[in-house]
Length: 169
Image 1: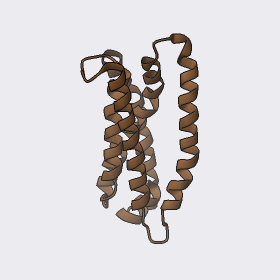
Image 2: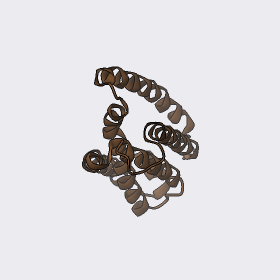
Image 3: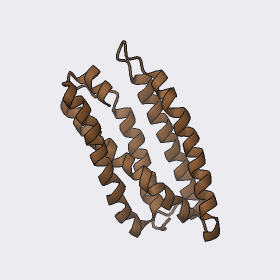
Image 4: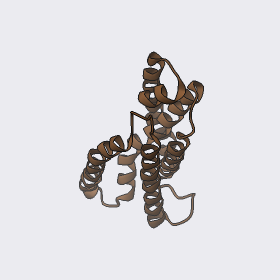
């Protein structure tokens, strides 16, 4: 976010680094507040829309070219992506009927996520061209991956609870 902010918004160096603080601060709220809602509605019922919103916001990042818009984007993206981090373990547990298998399934889920994070970060870095300030390919990659994950979350929810939105999953 700081490199993009400096390259595309004309922000000062200090504000560019504050966008990361804004994102992390909003992520803290995003890790806590959705969990309270998920207690009543089910973690997967909150995680899935947050994943779709995060994917949509990643695509909305492309036209951000002002300091104010970057601040708003950082706050919204931090809020929705924070929920992805904190609700994932609870969602895996909610999909598991046998409590004895929760640990195995969490290990499998985090193993797959770890490989994705290990590979995704350098791929996104390779898609950025700092000389020209071109971030579009990395932004599209981010949006596509998160949106794809949201689709798989939707499929998992439908497989577990069907199409009814009133079922707590």
